Length: 254
Image (cartoon, rainbow, N blue to C red):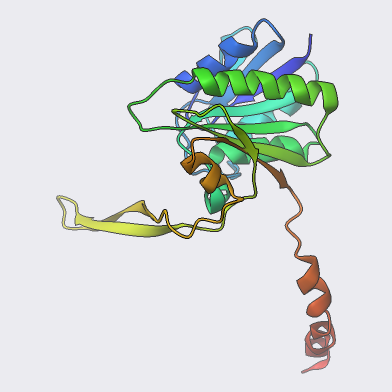
């Protein structure tokens, strides 16, 4: 049987993680190494200034007092007896599309796995907070796992999958959207008179490019976006290279 490592950013006890594990348990050996508590927005951050405590929950199940990326690193380097064939992060309760993939702990965990040359998937359910129906997302996760284990993925490419609820039954391979949200701050005062802020998003549903993840999900279709770890912009690399001589001149100045 293949060996699949599951993680997330919603925490070890999250319903989406349990649904994902249930969908895979008769198909693969499943290990779970997930954050002890919710770490939404953690991206690919690491815990560097305190120890990472690990709690054994049951056989092949651990909860890590750290970030999603911490969980993957500890799993690969200490907890698992062998390298997994696939890592799936999720199922996140909430979309991870467009430029939000840079903030997402769900995507950050999958990216950490891809850095270790392991095929990886980030799975998200696009539904209102009171909708906990992970059935379609779990079925998609099972199907994509079977495909990846049969056909593989390019090295250091991960799949970011967003499943709308309700789902039309259609699936689109789509580009990552440009930002269609605006970060906002809500200001208040605590009982001691100190100013605090809550970050929230304002979403714009117009001018969405038709071949993107947002367009797919807004239409009720599953969005699958292949993400590569190399963010180098080759055009700028060539276009700006003549700056090197000017910058090197700094070395010779007193």
